[in-house]
Length: 318
Ligand code: NDP
Image (cartoon, rainbow, N blue to C red; front, side, top):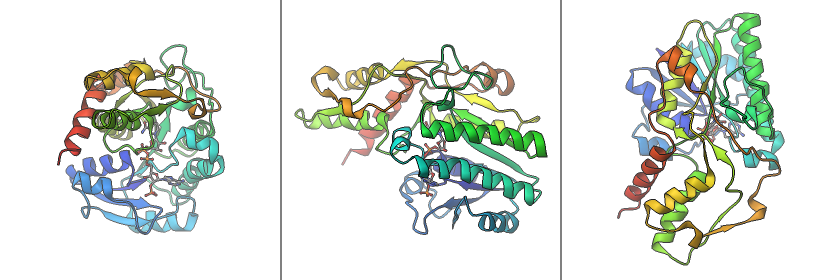
């Protein structure tokens, strides 16, 4: 078995590569950079265990050459400018990375009569606010450039599956965390900030709107779910979530409480950190994944917080 992983240096890409390698799959990891940031691969102990290649997901010839040369059984498209906040400041780059990359990959796969399976990392941001737990058939109301690009890509994957019989599928992922999340994401910022408050009581953590509510899960588990979806017959898009929603205030309070701190003493709420348009509540319906694949999230928000703090404390030990 051989897999191509686009976005292999990111949180999910790195964890997926490790999971595939453990299963004996030959992995080719793709990065935009000829000098990729391999910090997460090193932390996970997989640096050097996979073949790394530079590729521009939007370049037809380059991707065609890759697929023809490697003849992979599976392709995972995880590459994206993945920050919702940044997508307001860099909408063109965000669009290019998500929709142009996805349609180019699908078009190459169609042109090359690719017979393997192709996974696309969708996002719960496509739903906007969820009145009730969202499933793949729920109404969609994207509220950011990132969400619009993920929505268009989700539709495109469906069209290529239905119109051309391509074995492609989307896992619509709700937020999922790990110690390998970039430090710019809010969950990591909160954990790192709270630990800094322990060392330096004068430090102030600046955050935006704490009333927003999310469905947080654990990345390693979501990697398992992606593979189940990709290898099922018939292929069906699925939502990957825990089904539990909590506010960011809950997240902050719990992190600080685990460190015996009161967040009110250490956090400043800053209006400039609010997004131009924000999803207030986002939660998924976990039942289809449980019914179809027997998969359910084992760690919800509380488990995620405990694990993140444990890892951060371990990492800060001398
Ligand atoms: P990361 O941001 O950690 O990794 C994404 C990877 O994509 C990066 O390592 C980078 O690799 C590549 N990339 C970054 N910017 C661009 C760009 N402008 N153009 C092309 N490639 C780029 O994301 P995650 O691992 O957290 O997420 C994986 C996928 O899942 C993404 O598509 C994300 O949108 C989606 N997703 C993630 C969620 C989450 O909670 N983590 C929730 C919902 C969806 P390199 O620099 O080496 O090219």
